[in-house]
Image 1 (cartoon, rainbow, N blue to C red):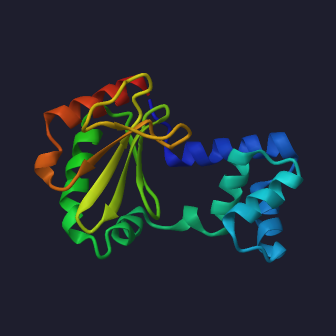
Image 2 (cartoon, one colour; image 1 turned 30 degrees about the vertical axis):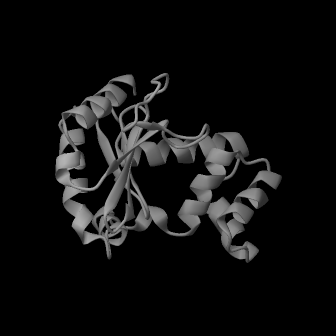
Length: 182
């Protein structure tokens, strides 16, 4: 079963304290008082203090107020100027939520992640006329439609969706397979 956002936040905070001996609030203050604005430079600063990459990213997101934002506002921001793609996203989200009670849907500034024990997909409104649906299907060779992504990408494959009809049985089967592997 997927953990709630509160459980995930508590786990990250506890892990950070255990590994560094300092609270999230301490590290947020370090970032905010550093004067460094660029995300990658903030991460580099934290790494000089022995903070791992995952925790550094978590700290930088917290320093920017990312965890205080309303998920609905995040979705509205993703689809501003791309409103025609919102029905495609809604179809994906409805289907993903129906895969199981353990599905978590996490809107961010530029993408929405779908997770179970780990992320199995992400929806990115790539343009006014297309959503890129990233799907984690490690070991799948891909097809002309399900294109493999570069190694190290957040998802192993991508499908380009332009209409709700593009989110068809074939794409749903790939999404379900990714969910089952997560």
